Amino acid sequence: MRKESYEFPLEEFISREEFKKIKKFSRDKETPFLIMDLRKIELMFDEIIGHMPFAKIHYAVKANPLDEVVLSLKNKGSNFDVATVYELDQLLRLGVEPERISYGNTIKKEKDIVYAFEKGVRLFVTDSESDLKKLSKYAPGSRVFFRILTESDGADWPLSRKFGAHPDLIYKMILKAEKLGLEPYGLSFHVGSQQRDIGQWDSAIAKCKYLFEAAASKGIKLKMINLGGGFPAKYLSPTNDLETYAREIYRFLSEDFGDELPEILIEPGRSLTGDAGIIVSEVVMVSKKARFNQYRWVFLDIGKFGGLIETLDECIKYPIYCEKKGCAEEVILAGPTCDSMDILYEDHKYSFPHTLKEGNRVYIFTTGAYTMSYSSVNFNGFPPLKAYVI
Ligand SMILES: *Cc1c(COP(=O)(O)O)cnc(C)c1O
Image 1 (spheres, helix red, strand yellow):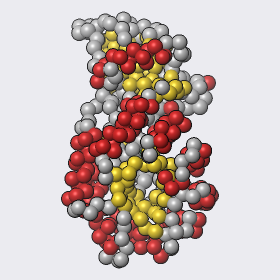
Image 2 (spheres, helix red, strand yellow):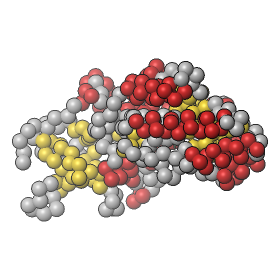
Image 3 (cartoon, protein in one colour):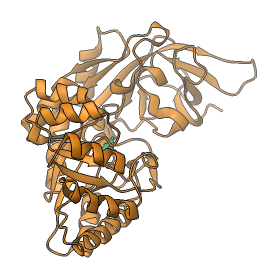
Image 4 (tube, protein in one colour):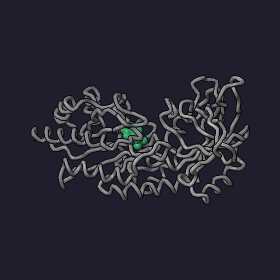
């Protein structure tokens, strides 16, 4: 079993210099915790704008709602997409103007709409007649965009099925929205998070084109397409780079809309914040289940309930690094809670040095998105994931 020596392509995820700083910063802190590097988020913001100058960014706050993250994106000129009145309150508290905020959840109570409208939000998504009626009553005159159902094939963390409606239904809603005194403004979709198949945008954009024409034939001019999220962060499973996404998506848009593109919005969450986070965790225990079992179990002090819920079905494979030297040994990785679902990776075997033992630290890269916002409040008494900002 033990042959090759343990290796990890550290420099694909962080420079040696930066890693030294991270180690120094973390030395006296108790694990587990997340470190967010704001500079990396700002660079990523610039990179996205650079590759997609035709798009307006509405950051999906749920990916990482830290005040500091929101503020640095606010200062970069980003707009924001919220899912709840709680996220809305946070943004307003941080001084984000309501004109920069879209309400991107198709599932809302009447009183949520009342509240958002009262606070000045005028851009809402919808995907049902029921919600549309509520919007017409409680957010009269607002701009609405309609979410199209997509399949999410090819996404590591699928988002569809629950959201969106078939184009035929959307068409009816567009006509109805106008009758109800709303402004049918545009269309949206989400091709699934960490979408590795760029072609998914092609078919979704084609549906938009069809609906733009159908609406135009009734004298309604839609103005906007919201391309959603789905852009990649850097995990173990390879993806194309952002430049390729941008180029291909621009090509799909031009093929359907020619030179006169509608207003384009994107709602990146994962791609903006994912790469900017590192979780530092400690090995709690290493054990074997039976004397002749092939694999050792390595239990970390963070698991599914501490912020790594996207390891469900091993969907997201985080790069995990341990500094020790030794032979590469495949192990089963699990979290610290008393729930047997709290196993991180069993099918996909992670390799660690055979010398790995209790008390050693591991560094989990690309954990800036969907970790602390997903960590449980008090399961087994574990506190929610701590976050530091550098
Ligand atoms: C979660 C979400 C996003 C962000 O998606 P990523 O794949 O993380 O970029 C964007 N839009 C909506 C409506 C969402 O729910």
